[in-house]
Image (cartoon, rainbow, N blue to C red; front, side):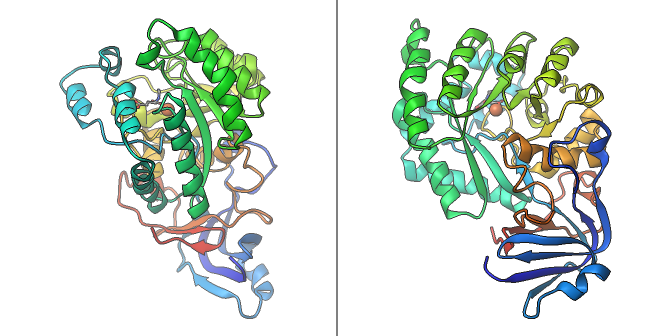
Length: 416
Ligand code: NIG
Ligand code: FE
């Protein structure tokens, strides 16, 4: 937004100011809190964030003044793992799971991801856009300003490209920032039953080069699991993606150790996501390769499972953890980052400060956006939230409260 903006009367400003890299260990609890603060913005970028007493004389004449009324201001949430674009719902499977069926049993019977693939293939691109907009608006309203979004419900050329085009359109219309990830390696589609190798080869040799040349994705992901891709198949896809300039992420060890985390370390992927079943030895490999774990407690919760990823162990070992929703129609129909933060605190025993850093600054670094968003420091984009309270811990402590922060992206207030 052109012009000057000054947010004044901030009771508690969470800057997350510090070194320009993801936070580990005790750094995850350093919030750079400033009381009685102000935030100055010029043309959508932060020029300063600090005590009002020091900044008041720098507020330009004619600046738009926003009164935070003594409340807390934090960076906008960065949701680094979502399946934002899909058609339909899986409410019937929700009922099956309530009755006792597991996610894997439903998948093995041809439901799960493949049922959303059928619905998504049958939808028009405009229908997918309308559905994705609805999901995006839920996220914006609960304070998410940057969203990573994956394809993976097409598993053939036209629908995979269509999902990525929907993300590009959403990103262009704003205000949320969308980072696109190719996830054609989500499952082997039914047409390739008995010919898995051909599907993997098509992704390597045709789809990845086309997506990369058209700049339709920044990242590539693969779902490594007993019902999805083997470690060797995931290695092939991710290696090809890296050759074509895509950054790498992987769904690893959601249900069983040995399904992809060591591969993440071997390839030096940006992230390894899920990791509910990861072992301590593999965590050390991830740390040594600077892979960021993306923790998705919404999927553990919604699948009624008990094993959350070992977040405290990860922090102890020095891993730069990230929290995300995994928003999708099956394993995690959860769009709200505040709810994810509540789960992270209560089920994985993160402190509220650790959860907030993992959901903002560390998430931004995992998307190679750490120099632009995720903290409130001079030079960064002014993506921030004015909460209705003056203690950031209320974000996670009032569980599933219908919080309505004022949301700003690049200094402009969002009305979603
Ligand atoms: O991250 N695990 C694979 N992909 C998603 C689930 C997608 C779906 O069930 O539709 C996940 O949990
Ligand atoms: Fe996922």
